[in-house]
Length: 272
Image 1: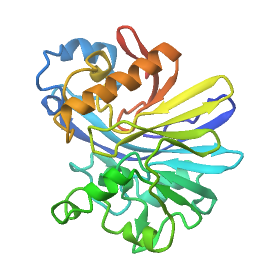
Image 2 (image 1 turned 120 degrees about the vertical axis):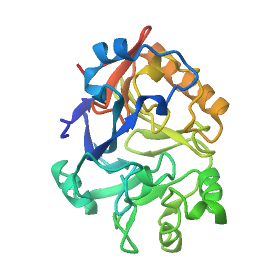
Image 3 (image 1 turned 60 degrees about the horizontal axis):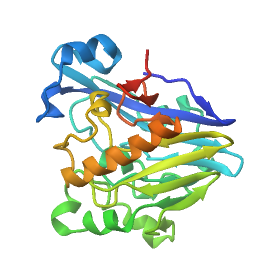
């Protein structure tokens, strides 16, 4: 499961992988006629078997001169959405990527589903003791509703971050640290964000849950049943992927087994 780091304009981006689980192919793009055999021929690494794809749980550590920024924090103590096929404990996953929690100065939560924010608080205490956590206020409000707190979200324990003054709920797009900024890309959740790293002449966009399978790059406008607002999610996906293609940006995807690539005219390029 280990993934080597990449360098974006001299900035190192490391992958923290906690494991993967198989998801059925019809779990995504239900309204599209996808040639899965053709997809498997182009992206064999994305599949678990002939009937399912491999859903990985990645977080990313961006090592800047101003300090380490985490984009998402993994599951932490939460269970996966489906049973693991392979798993690394949270501390082991961080250690494998060479990340010391004390060095992390900021954590960007693309959204508050447990697989992206569950590692923020462990055993009632902040996992990254020196970090400010950036959350869009729309997600903070949405997942704070009584019928949402007990669902697949890490929002509940994160009130400790708020109590300690470690939570940033700035609504506007803004720079977080070291050339990394957050960009509102709603639909998957109301406050879903992408993160964009600009380093020299290079740009990397970290997509959060705009993407789950490579076929969504070719079918960017297709509705995702994972989204709270599928139409809004489609618009966000088209907008971000169009910018990535036109700007020749690098792209990092939380749930692809091989997370780095680019967007081409015919779809996803990378992972070979």
